[in-house]
Length: 178
Image (tube, rainbow, N blue to C red):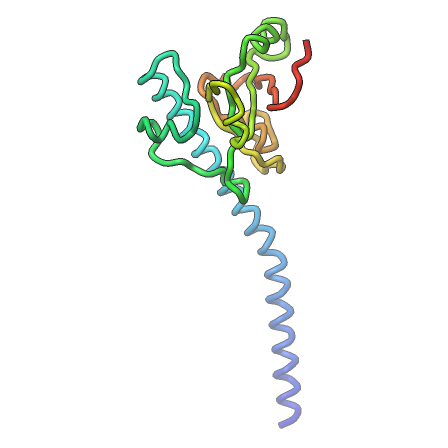
C-alpha cells in the first residue's frame, strides 16, 4: 500500500512538471497574440478617427475639429475610442502646423509633410488647435511593421496622410529649428 502512494505522488509530480513546462511555453505565445490583437484594434481605431475628420471636413469645409469631443458632438464619430496600447487610453493628437512649420516644410527635402504631435492634455493650452489625426502615446516596439514604423508612437493616423512618406514630426514643446 505504501508503494502505491509513492508512485501516485511521483506521477502527480511529473504531471505538475509537464503542465508547468506547457504553461511556460504557452504564456509568451498568448502574450504575443494579445499584442497582435491590440495592434489590429489600434489600426481600426486610428482609421475611425481619420474617417471622422474626413466627414467633419465634408460637413464644415475649411475647418478642423478643435477637440475629439467635437467629432462626436457633430456626429462624425460614433464614440470616443481609447488608445489600446496604453493603460490610461489617452491619445496624442496630430495637429496641422502653423506658418513657421510651413516655411520649414518648403525648405525640407526629407519629407513632404510636417505635423505637430501633442498630448491630449496639452490641447487646452494650444490656441485654435486644428486636429487632423491621432497617434498612440505608447513608445513600445511593435510586432507588426506599419508604414515602415516599428513603434506605436510612429503609427500616425491623420487626414491627408501619404502612406508612402513619413512626415517630419514636431513634438509639442519642442523648439523649432530655423
